[in-house]
Image (cartoon, rainbow, N blue to C red; front, side):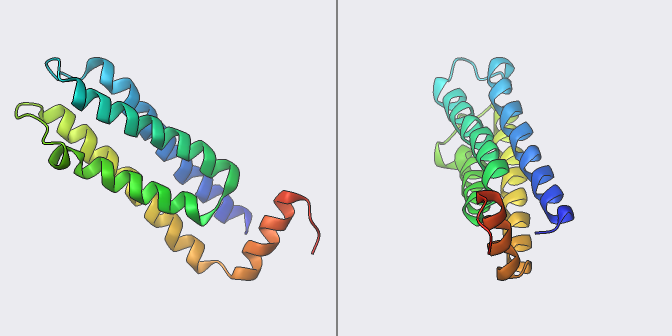
Length: 133
């Protein structure tokens, strides 16, 4: 994996981390009128997104990209799946936009990992683990 690919991967993961952190912080000031399920959903999915971004920075694996895609899509559809009450437009927008950003970063990661040759991924993986090929 070239330095440019690694840098773009880290940038994508940092975007996911910041998005997750904003979602977690937003639960403090989002106007949800005491609806704990909405706050809980955004909080838990935001924590999972931030944690998966830290994992992705350390591992640079394809599974981390797919995790971001899945978490992002789950977050984006959470207002419909959990039937967020009407009048919570800010919470809906945070969940949908945050989810789409996370899913987009994961999708870009999947696409870029498919473009890099398998041999370079094996070499990069062995370099991280200290094994010489």
